[in-house]
Length: 154
Ligand code: AMP
Image (cartoon, rainbow, N blue to C red):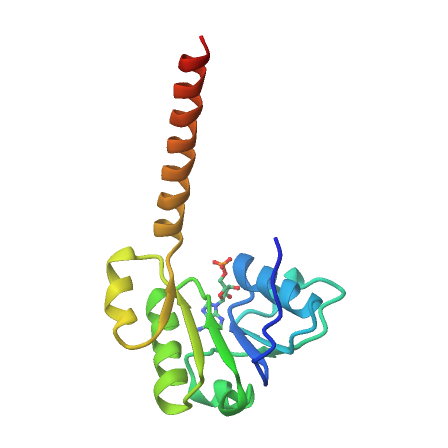
């Protein structure tokens, strides 16, 4: 997968949660030269970072404002909250947006019903269930088109 470095972006990106998604994102962004700070409550989660990861790690509960201050959130260009807890992600996103005026805030939400609510607060949300649904729909309609073309060819 390709990520493009934003030319406009200055400052660094804070990723909250070094799990399957967070670590992958941190490795990928670090590889293209972005400055990354990644926070996790669990020390062993940092093992998912690749040896080439050039960012900083902070061990702590990111729902505590003191941990976000340690990560110098006031200087961040983006905060991406991808812990495995929707409420934690939303709380962190709201703190980042409202108290620290972080320009770009993204939260992962497992519950699709919460997605539209938080869009109203200017928080961008990523919902794996909704994305999966779109991909499945795309694959199914692709399969359908192929079957129709096979029928025409016969
Ligand atoms: P995954 O479900 O694989 O995307 O992993 C989620 C990650 O979020 C795990 O590594 C957790 O340790 C981490 N996590 C969960 N709650 C917090 C929190 N309050 N602060 C920081 N990291 C957290």
